[in-house]
Image (cartoon, rainbow, N blue to C red; front, side, top):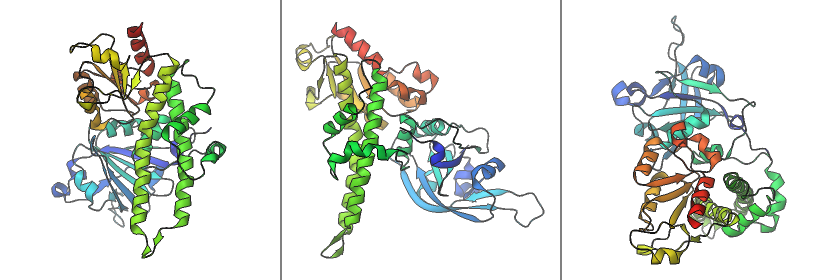
Length: 405
């Protein structure tokens, strides 16, 4: 099934490291950045005083971000003057532009509808590394570097779609209608997460975790994501068609509640799916484990190896047979929660689906005696130095099986 390309969503992108003049109006008395000839040729054009609808996003390091809908104006500051043209993009003051500062990276992209995406990420943050990898560019010098997207580029993989979803780009598989026969039985209701994960594996019979646990895990997650989004579209469409009306007229509270439920379901579902499919991978390799076992202080590590009895009878300093594995679809600052789980196991392991976690974060993990496990297809979004330290799912299985034999 086709997976889409960046050109399906964006015409082009420009990237630059913000200077004090670009980012701090109090210093520069400006709200604008200069654009380059290549950016104008590729996607911005040269229409004087063109006002673009724009969405501003502050990705806020490894914390939650800020999103603001607004506008931006592209203009020639030397229009009708004898000197050479000098094009600038004017941005209004908003929570995003007020949060950004010197040294942050601006990703300025134009999508296929003509909307500008003004995305700002702090230097050396996970969000910055992810977007560098997604767009295939890094800033150089003081001006924008840019590129146009074409249909000749590779299809979007799991990591790329993960990042697009993180910044709020809505997407659906180009051939998503082929999934309707699989989800038809659910009508307009969501099944339990375990049932949905089972269905995803059942309808990919050619995928075998015994052959390649990393590829299988990603294939199952990818397939389930496509099934979920197709079913979600059906459920949401049905609810919108029914309308939000009560005895008092328009049911604003009902609409807000429904919208929040959609967002919360999206956020929680991926974490559950990861655990379900990871458990299937472990079973396929006959790795003895227990899920959700309760250890000290009522902590519940996602996976404990080989079993709870071995853990409970182990001395305080631990047992060589013991291993624990946390599972988080995204890490952010939550990876530190794993450090408090299973006190008898000094070295922790954490599997994540998050692409391109920043080097400062992975250095902190390593210093905290935490080994990050990233499925092999996602590891390309990390730096070469990081890839030498990361474990794959196959690496983890090999290490645990060695302990269990």
